Length: 308
Image (cartoon, rainbow, N blue to C red; front, side, top):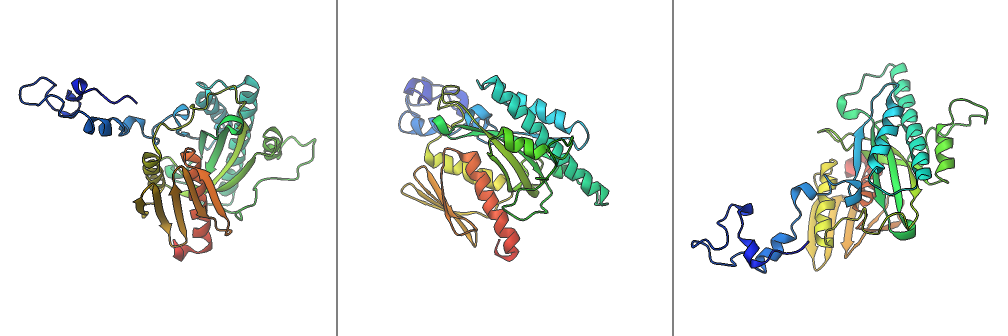
């Protein structure tokens, strides 16, 4: 982003007289003040509102009826319409998104059959898409969220042993095959609505050929210091509103809960997982980083509700 020149600085954007006004000294908003203002993200450009190409996450609600799979196919195509992804990958992605949506609808029907109370609007399924990685590790991630958490963390729900000639019950087997094993599930929270309800996200990823997308596509334009601000906002927006943070010399510490502390050093983010291992990820993949931190928080919440 180009900083404004002194002549461009005193415009009406801040409600001030224009440069040349006798009441305003010329260059009052010149460097370094203008440079500082130039790098503050516009609210319309925040990651919470950014599209996939700008490093954000595409999110839409899914209907809880027989149109669920069709809606997932339509949303997948809409989300990737601005990306130069090979048509074969798009076709595979559409197929897998449809299967994840159908799997979610099947789970919702099981809940209804069991006589469970109808869910509120805040608990409807959601489809999410975003990019992560660069170069040969660039991936398009698709997730379908629902509020059913009746499974042990680390397991893959719904992977039935349906025979090869079965006409149903093979949805996640299709996902496993088309994604070359790049799929799974994890605890998470909803993105849409005012109440961020807990649940799980079942996901797959598609490896994008390096020549298909330039490295800047899907990467936020912020400095690491501003990007950690965005990360904190994304976590708070998903219901983690009690974060305690400290910053010093390019290092940020975010205390999420009594047992979960996130460290940011430069562009690297790290924390200790519930399994005791240290996770280290690239802050530039902010959407995916937030998802992983949420997963760690939710697993700890299940294991020790008092700690969080």
